[in-house]
View 1 (cartoon, rainbow, N blue to C red):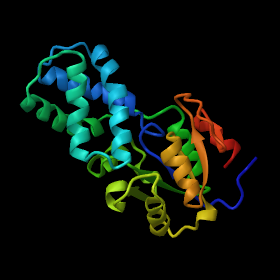
View 2 (cartoon, rainbow, N blue to C red):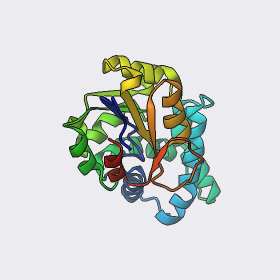
View 3 (cartoon, one colour):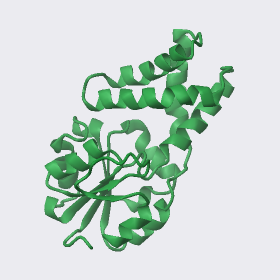
Length: 229
């Protein structure tokens, strides 16, 4: 079943196109080596990944600040592992993480192919809750920046997905109508519910097989978008 009347396709970036987990792991490997942090990377990531996810949910719901997210996720991860580390070193790691992260360029499977397929057919855009200072750099370094006509960040919009205003802002920037637009993302609440509440169509990218109860079309590989677009 193909969607009708779609002219604009909006993507989330992290965990949808850009391989956040792999790039984040490589970042920690590099900064731990540079700062001589003697901890097993696998152990650290086992603690950090769920803690980071929880912090992002709090941030998305405006319960913590950007600064609290950046520092708290590291502090809590080291604390869980009973690894002693100074506040000064934590601040240094937090800064270096943001500095190093966008230099890595791994994309999720089929990203380049599906963007090549979609570009002649639709205008492509990004809507992201990620930090404004790194999102463009991620896209440039992974060679996908030129596929997109607009990028709308939550910091620019003043609200985060799923708030309707960020979708409205993205639509205005791209001179698009909701009825001619579709959102694709991996976070059901932020991307799918948010987009639908703003009047867009949506496809849930369940890459991590969370198996959320979804009333939207669900895909597990980006190449499946060819069936709908």
